[in-house]
Length: 367
Ligand SMILES: *[C@@H]1O[C@H](CO)[C@@H](O)[C@H](O)[C@H]1NC(C)=O
Ligand SMILES: *[C@@H]1O[C@H](CO)[C@@H](O)[C@H](O)[C@H]1NC(C)=O
Ligand SMILES: *[C@@H]1O[C@H](CO)[C@@H](O)[C@H](O)[C@H]1NC(C)=O
Ligand SMILES: *[C@@H]1O[C@H](CO)[C@@H](O)[C@H](O)[C@H]1NC(C)=O
Ligand SMILES: *[C@@H]1O[C@H](CO)[C@@H](O)[C@H](O)[C@H]1NC(C)=O
Image (cartoon, rainbow, N blue to C red; front, side):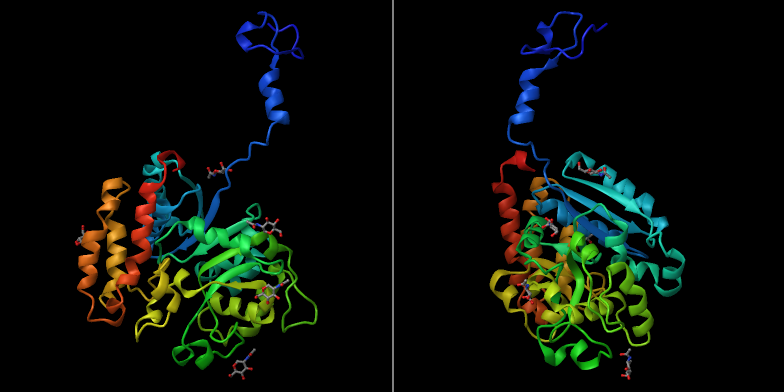
């Protein structure tokens, strides 16, 4: 039908002679010379779900979606029997159009997979391999399943831009109070800083992790990420207690210039209030990311943590629902003041209240 494809008409298509298939020069030129149309950057969030962690993981993802502004891309590593459930629930949320997701089996990088298998427990160590498995992804926020976002993922994501030239990852200290710290009292291996770091919320520039040569205590040579893990585990496997978190502590002990340490309110755990409050930043600005480790969302030991979890688990994406989540939650929290964490329940909802408010103040199309 077309005599000539190469003709360029400064005309709308409908005014072209019927036998030419011209290019629309106006738009073509506009794209060529105009400001580059940048695709919106997605924030990459990874989680590893094994065992009975479906509901918890879904609640975490929901909290990420509710408050975040830029689109999210989830990388969900899950045991095979959980895949159908994840797919069913996440597909039912696809109308939101603010996220997409990929589901992966629990796996090792294809190189040396057999050797990895012999040494590493797949579920527990999956996160260490993310830079090697998600080769195309520049940066990633890894979180445990028992995390709840009380402010937009965008806010922690923006810390990536604060990294200086040697920093490759960011985590919070394992403890604020050395007297109840674990690493400084019990560890039989090196660890980062005064009290070690907690890996439940870990921001990574994986491009840099893949490029870096790491100092270590096994050879005088520096080693790449993919080469350091196996010898490290071989050396320390009898001395480590918390698995991959311990390996990360050993690595950053030897490479302290590579770690960005963010304050405790980005990874707030029962340890921060169980014997009295010791996370000062959270007292001032509220909790940003809640980390209900040791199963506190599911038992009665720390009812303040559980109340936040249940409120987010129960709420839907409807605006009214989210807005009306606070009142009953505060009533629930007031019942927890017999615990040390409950005594300071206001810091549990301080930032959350603002996040909910901000969500309504944002123009709707941005979402
Ligand atoms: C999610 O969106 C990004 C950006 O549009 C795209 O590159 C990626 O392939 C998508 N992933 C899935 C699993 O659809
Ligand atoms: C493991 O712990 C033991 C006992 O504390 C210590 O003697 C040994 O040096 C440790 N091993 C390594 C590799 O640090
Ligand atoms: C990660 O580091 C690479 C290499 O330094 C850099 O090009 C990239 O912009 C960084 N990513 C982010 C999100 O800052
Ligand atoms: C980056 O910050 C870390 C932690 O404060 C520090 O140890 C390191 O020297 C800094 N790197 C540069 C190049 O300034
Ligand atoms: C959440 O829902 C459960 C069951 O549907 C209910 O028992 C519980 O009271 C609700 N909790 C909150 C905090 O709304």
